[in-house]
Length: 172
Image (cartoon, rainbow, N blue to C red):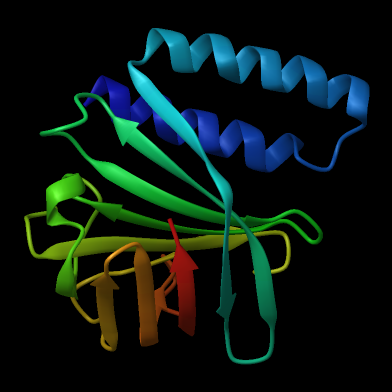
């Protein structure tokens, strides 16, 4: 649980400071690296892997990376697709890497995820002040084929109940 909280803190910190100057960005990246080392979090760059995603009126594309939140075989596994300008991030989290296959259901929450489910979150300056995530009202499809994640008409919600529909094709 502490590892997940640390990861969320890291993502929030990165999101808040992503638009600052390069000098400040270097300090932030150094802080994130130190926190990652303490949190047993493994980050892997996608080595040229990319993804595209869209909401109702916007299209995004960016590089992908993977994250293991603890043990690589039994703990959560995430795929992140991030566009830098304007900063927008789509994160797909699975119960573990082995669970990242087939047709999946939207998870109600990040902490209560089971095999056969995926938690999706969409955030960034171009999305607004709220993060949009899967919940028990989400509809649409989540499919993983090999190293490709396909989201089709997936409905995400923020804390106020507003929704966004996202489509995506992400390589990892």
